[in-house]
Length: 567
Image (cartoon, rainbow, N blue to C red; front, top):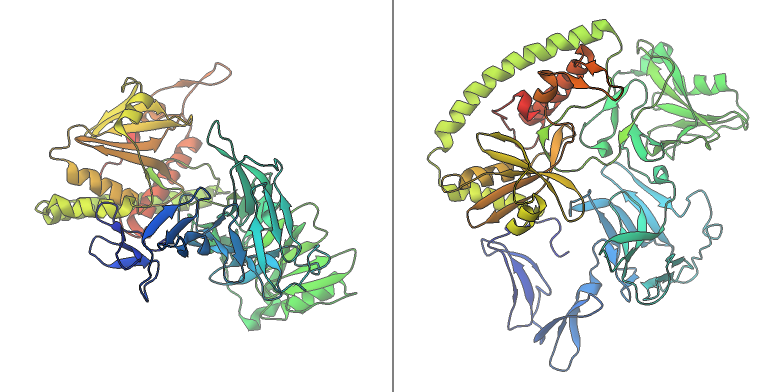
């Protein structure tokens, strides 16, 4: 991808092949975002997309002057080589094209590796960093540093790395991709369905990928990988696990006697050892860490009597096969609930979402804590309502005279790389000509539909857009800037002639009003009423979504229509 970190306007940008042999991409204002050769002209007079997937510029003699294969993004295609000047760099998340933190590259010792290169730390995690080059079946003697994926599904490298697709052979389309979750995978295409299946992957244990859960975070394999904060810690960003966890306490250097240690069996944090002590007792290891201001925790292997004090806590993971225990250093006044169970949430939470839905995490363990937080949310709710009235009134006066094109322009920028554009005929077919109505409101009617890939969706039809063009693009633009676990995911939009539709994920349990104002039948046939415990969880989930919109997202948003039908 030529411009992965600088999206262009989807309506007014253009790709040009000039007479001087340069191909370039310009944005709506005419500025050059990318070009094949910005420094000098070439004698290229033909642009051609080859059957291999390589985009080339050729001169009149058929000689290649430039080719896309020289600049891979996150994917390698058959016959495309990778060398010391190239690397595969992951995207930042699912559905995102921005440059991520994971790379597949030739290291300085001629060996191909996977590395996490984040904002706080860098760490190689494949091949196994605990083994030598030769123990990992590689060699660092060949300095040519070149590798290629052939058309039979075999990837061969000068360091001795050989990868074979499980369906090795000719006639199958394949790609080698550095995925956003830090795993390198070889994919094969099913020509009948057009879907991709994994035919090889580097990491069979996802929690051994470094950087997934950020600083102080612990990856749990259950069997999907999830992230958790250790006791005494909390998430930095509820929407992004790569930001990790932060302590809910502080320890000064003169408070060495005011510390305690919490035991986390079968847990380890890879790297960042301050020191290594052999043949040392557990108590001596605790004493060593408690008297070292830089020590945050220590790993202790009971069978070997070895101690590894940790200065920073990165790349944490839990697995029953780990023959070690981590002892977290906490302040003595930190309250710990026994038994300690690490209960994580999905490590990748970068989906784009829109409407509020309730979460299921149980954050509170005492009536006193529940009461305190309930008063807090009631108070902030009242303040929030007053805030909504003033801000909504101000926004109405501020924007009622603005040209619709301003809102449309913001919408174009937001959707240029975030959502899929659906054809009206596709959504008409998916909803069976808009037959099953889920609900309706002031802005339109919502219908149930099934996409071609089997996904259930809710399609919001905004009706005649003669006076609502600005409203439509403003909503798309706003949705494109928000991302939170308590927002319903948006799959895309439709904009054809006077048809304006928004496509959301379908929530099978419906909206809150259907549960709040009526009874419902349980699986055992007993009529039940929504209890206060469930009501509290729902209120908390809604409050989290609103708090994010009001204070945490990049562009603050006022919902303006909070009601049970929209939760």
